[in-house]
Length: 255
Image 1 (cartoon, rainbow, N blue to C red):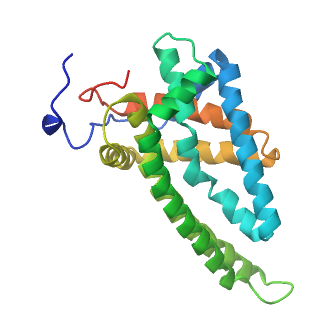
Image 2 (cartoon, rainbow, N blue to C red; image 1 turned 90 degrees about the vertical axis):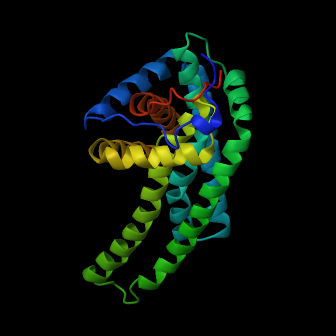
C-alpha cells in the first residue's frame, strides 16, 4: 500500500473502545510472548534489574533512605523507554520471526532519536518529581513519636503529588512508544494519541495502571530480582494493549 502523504495524515490515530477486562487479556498475551522468547526477554529483564541495582546503590551511597525511595518511585518515569526492546520482541513474534537480543537492540537503535527525545521529556518530569519529593519532607512531623494524624497528612500529601506526576506520565506513555516502534510517525502524534486513548477508556486504563503498579511492587518486594520477569511481562502486554486500542493503519509501518 502506498504511503499516505504527511499532510493528509490525521493529527491523532483513532482509538477503540476497551472493556475493563481487556488488561487481563493483554497480560495473558504478554505471558505468551514471554514464554515464546524467554531467553531474549529475560536477558533484557535482567538488564533492568542491574540498572535498578545501580540506582539503588547510588541512592544509598550519596543520599538518604528517603532519597532512595523517591528515586525508586521515579522508576515509573523511565520504565516506558526500557520497554522498547519488549515491544520489538512482540512485534517480531507477531510477524512469525524469531526474536533475538541483537534484533531487539537493532530495533532500539532505529528508534534512538525518538527515544532520546522522549527520555529527555521523562527526565525533566522525573527531576521535577525528585524535587517535589524532597520538598514534601517539610510535612514530616517533628515530634517523636509522631502523631498518627501528622503521618497521615505527610503520606497523603506525598502520595497526591506523586500521583499527579505518575498519571501524566502514564497517559503520555501508555501507547505512544509502541506506536513509534510500529509506525513511522512523530512523537507528538504518538503522545497525543496515547493521552486521547487513555482518557476515552478510563475504566480499562485504571485496571491496567493497577496491574502495572502491582507488578513493579512485586519486583521491589523481591529485592528487585522479580523485575526480571515482571518488566518483560508488562512490556509484552503493553504491545498487545497498543495493538488492540489504537488504529494506526493510516501510518506506514516501520518494517
